[in-house]
Length: 239
Image (cartoon, rainbow, N blue to C red):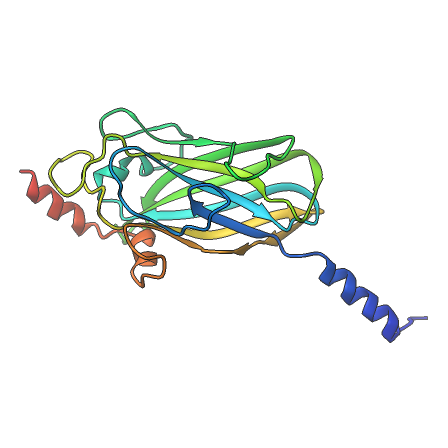
């Protein structure tokens, strides 16, 4: 005989479900203790983006984050557009130095024991007929064996190191130019597998920008694709 649960049983189920908080993902410039969605050009050097999570109540086995970036026509960010298939960092910049690298250590966040970080960088046309280019950064953290975490602790996912040591502002060089031009990173998705169930994490700021406000209406368009015609206009500059 099928028994219908009483009000008390339903209440217990609701309390149990609400007790498991949805994890919150932070993607920011600088240490994980900050929430800085925009970074301006401050001269040649390394600029860090940190990825961290808090509110994980349960046993964590993996985290996956996918970030789109663009536009693809600035030499200062050439290292983020290697083509297809995606490749692992470190990635060379336009002068042969290391322009992009990663670290599992995150300033302001606790390392997860047994965690392994894998990051891949790629770029491709949107489709056969749409010749606009989009860059992607795929971040995968695997925890083996799966580990029960403290929901009140901020945990490290990884640090993305953008080394703009050879970058220059403006269009004065045909190589690492455009360091002071707008550039955007948009988190397309962030999910954690907790207790064997994939859970979409809340995002504090899905848009992380360079040289423009995080709420700029054009930021998503910049990261989604760069028009192929932009390449032509830049080539005209350096004939």
